[in-house]
Amino acid sequence: MNRPPLASELNLCLCHSCGLACDMTDEPHECTRCGAPLHRRKTNSLARTWAYMFTALAFYFPANLLPVMNTKMVGNGADSTIMSGVIEFWQHGAWDIALIIFIASIAVPGIKFVALTLLLVTVQRDSQWASKQRSTLYRFVELIGYWSMLDVIVVALVASLVKFQALADIEPRPGILFFGLVVVFTMLSAMSFDPRLIWDKEERDNPNEEVMDEVASH
Amino acid sequence: MATTESLIICEHCDCVYQKVTLAKHQKTLCTRCGGVLQRYNGLTVEQRLALTFTALMLWIFANFYPVMSISLKGLKNSATLWDSVLALSLGPITFIAMVAAISMIIAPIFQLVLLIWVLSFALAHRRSPGFKFCMRWLETLRPWSMLEVCLLGAMVAVIKLAGLLDVLPGIGLFALAILSLMMIRIAGRDIRDLWDTL
Image (cartoon, rainbow over all chains, first blue to last red; front, side, top):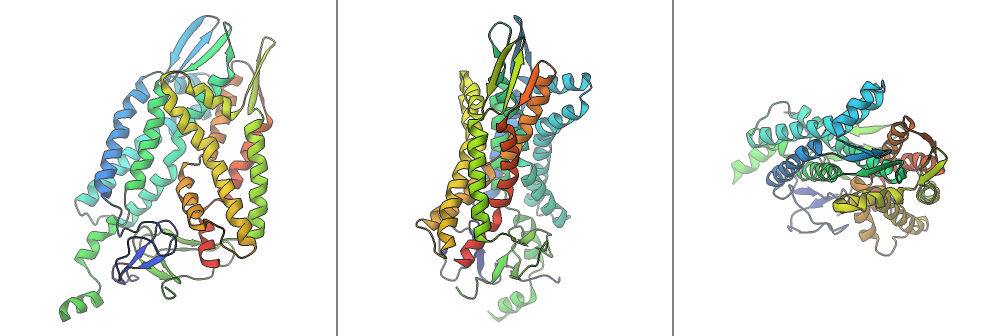
């Protein structure tokens, strides 16, 4: 194994707020530079990630099944869900907008559930499979994180604009609340996951030679 | 202390490296996990402060001018970002209005105010009062500031309504477009460099 030394071998710890490599010899609880709490690994990372993800998953169903807005045109009201909005755009030939909404609202949360489950299960099973690719996957999950807020903003703008009493009126519906909750909880879930856990098993199996020497001399 | 400040730890796999000086367009990647360690920061404190003031003006335009206006059979209506937050706050879904307000309005303005405060003192090579507090809040706010999403949402809303009635994009939308791009540049992770230089 040809790799740079690890923070644990040098008795260092990364401060997540300012990026300082903190010396852990005196076991400080706070970063000496910025005062943020120090943790070698995020606290209860796996349990928290699972918990936030299941919460998000529970909200994902009402978010897609309940109507997100109600359009009233000359007295005739109609509820629409996220999916019915996508289909409507598609049928009117606006396939590009349909695709944007579909990706942001339905695909992105779906991908995040699958990706986070994959990361959690592989870490819990101490898998060493494709560690580098799993790291990339985690960064991808962080990157796409907030794009699902798109529909919340669309509904908010449309509902605030179309206010012509009897003629035309658009109102938000509870589906959008659950939708926003899905976004918030998947973001919290991704933030709670510690990507360093992906690499920890490898270290336990193949510790660096220097460390082996140290252990041997004790 | 002096020995660890020149070190950089990969946040994705805990590998330790020595910091290097980067040239334009360069970045360093972790050899084990491929994560970005350092990116070239091309902005001086003066430039960043100037851009932050510009962004503050744009934030004011984006929030006080309508994002778009619509007309239907002679009736006109326009909405600002705040109007759209209020539209969500009615009924049983008030919580989502709070999330929207934070991500579209509150987080960006706090980021801008904190940046102006910190950078104004950095101009005189000093740490501002409450430097630690400001820098930590800038880190905390970053993931919750969603102006790019807000911009795409506004554009989708324009197209969605264009099928039903006449839509006119307003000054707010253009300000929002430039503001969201500027926020990516000025409020990014490279403000952490201030820890090393001050």
